[in-house]
Image 1 (cartoon, each protein chain N blue to C red):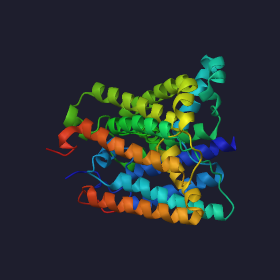
Image 2: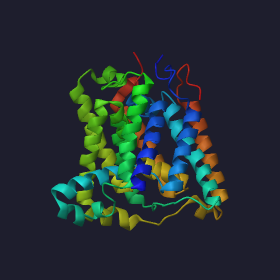
Image 3: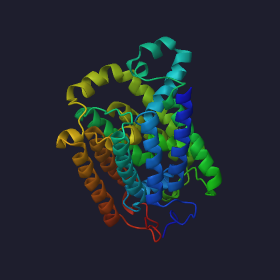
Image 4: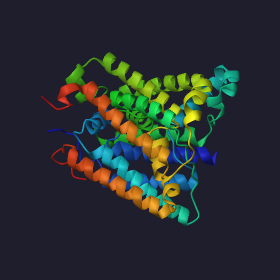
Length: 181
Length: 176
């Protein structure tokens, strides 16, 4: 029961923040994809950067439960392309559509129903899609920490990469007149 | 030019990213990597446990994840509650069909809803195949420095940028 309550509390805080920054608005998401507004992509990348530093500190203090998903090229490429097509069409991703439904957006309700249908379809095909695409191209639970030998070096490389991406998005995307970070 | 950032209640990018990171680190400390597409699986598992319990128990996808009464289920319900709370206190009018969509395809709700249904189908089918979604694979993974999450992030951003360009055409969402 504690688990459910923690989940609800965490989800409510998460949903509140992403609504306030504008990520539940499919218009803002589309403007991010169309390189017309840098805010949402920069928000996502900076949230990853700050969380990575936070998790690193948490682990240094002996806390944190982690789960590394395997690098499986076939499933990530095929799944990622299908995901990207849908994300560009709808302007919603699986998390934002729940918060957008709560916010009262009717198009998000249809995204959610479509998502349940997509989940059901995949679950039904799991038994042959996983051995066909996922398993054969699975190279294991690799991280930048493994690649560079030391977790801190991995973190620094990732931080440089993320900050470069945030900077590049700021340069290449158009800005609204009040679009300062 | 466009009204996106003129809302006084709209949070700026850096403080919002700090706030979200605080929540994510809290989740890592109290549960594990956060995920939202898995919440769809637990929701459906609950449905199938009622109407077709044998199918729910033998299907390898449903049996791999917890059903209702789990953190994952609480998380997506909480997401909706958080969106609701932010929406009613935000004083921002919510549109069923975004303006950018109306400029390109007109006011038809049917067209918009059909597209978000199809988009929703694709994002969940793709996420379940890849192992997670924007949050569960790209963000959670990259936060743990996982190569799977970093690669997935690059693929979904690149494809969505292309897909949005095809959907919104030459106008690129700009006002004429």
